Length: 233
Image: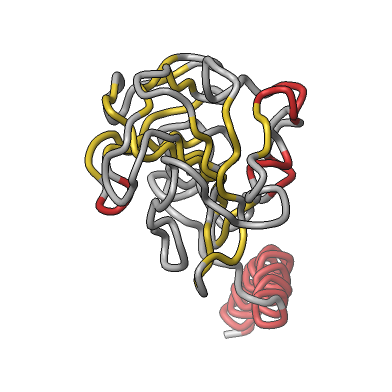
């Protein structure tokens, strides 16, 4: 009987030792799980990650190579010294930028003989070439930086939409199409949401002022009306 009790005590001791060993071995892992769980509860969730197909892709650029967004301004326009003359002849300035006949004239009128070649003042991409309402036959070129120039009342257009043009490249010939009574070039400088006076960039040697145009918006002779007033005409 005594021997059996002795063996029972030994077996209990062995089982107790084994159980204590298991507890000691399990303790570090359990503690680590508790710490990690505590950290997850305290940490803010990570922001969502955009899929690769949508992340880091800039907005599409326009044909001129740069976005034509609201950030475009006068600062993007090259200085006058870098412009090419818009006409292959000295013109007569017959109407200025500003109020005219109770409306706003968005460009300048430069009278020259019909058929005089018209050139792009700066490199860019043609976005319109053809009939344009009161402008008659017209060409609009968008330049790097988002600004553009428009050439109206042409007799002929020698470029097409989507075509890249260089500074000084011929784009048409002067005429009197649209709302005009004689041959002249209507030239506009456009930026998103507005217009600028082209004379700020035209070299004075490229034109001479007509007597009636010197003080404002007189339109003597052939280059009388062009319809380029408020509302984009």
